[in-house]
Image 1 (cartoon, rainbow, N blue to C red):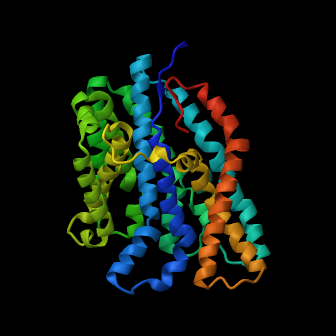
Image 2: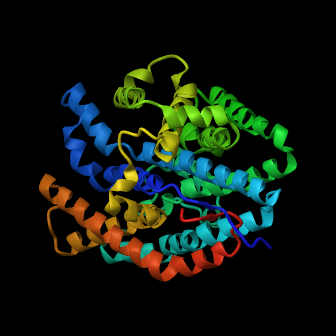
Image 3: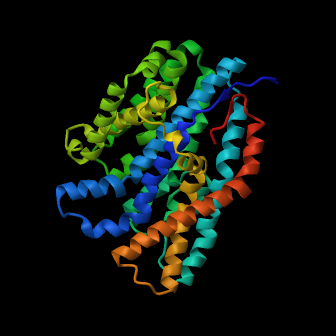
Length: 386
């Protein structure tokens, strides 16, 4: 037992979490309102896509962020305790992820069908429940989109990314435990190379494979972990990040913005479908370490207290926002309001966001917090990052 624990806290990352969630919500909550504006002009399409088609980017940022934080904490634990306690790691992840995950899955398969029947929707779903109860939801997402597209529900499908993270967490700490400190650096090129090989092999396959398959996206988490490893073990790397001038930071952010805004053009470059995602992983990882360690940062996402507070409940926001959207849709249908009007769709989006925040706050305070308190009892490295 350790009487004194180090504490790790990166205040700007809560704001980044909320930003990643908003990318997801803007697509889910407001995307339908802007469908009629597609194909107006290239610039308008890119602008709409930038703001209202960024759900995939939000998930990718969550992956990179998870890889960074988990790896950083594992390495700090190793430095503090001499080795990684894999059992406690699994207990912490279980107490953080499982309660809300299974609550969401139970709602999706037991309560959602009833609510759907209330508003007169009787469409069949292709979802196979056991995939969701065993953290294999991403593979069911592939199956649905390939063999019965449209026969799914957001309340069920939202858990696919959490399933990937849980699959990743199974082997990630074991690799650090098995390898000596001098060889742990090999973990990152190994996982990234396996990801690249899988993406090359499936380069001409359906896009669902490259989006939902664990092997296709595990590079996201590995690159986030690589940047954490460099911050912990490379003094020169950390000093470069800390001493970056504002001009260089601004230039890098400008490059990131340019690549993101014109990514449809970039995806026409041969090989981009294989390597493009990994490049953006590096972009998001840079933003993470810049926000955590730079002394000359142009802005700190943690300075906005509202965004920072909402970032603390980002897991609940991500998992529960389909319920907020669902409730709003049900109410508008019952009231027989025309939901094809642009102004009504925008109003529904704001109401859905407000409901999602309320539901997520209630979940955090009354459901998740007891598990978080228990989780902290197994923490060797204390953290305020929830």
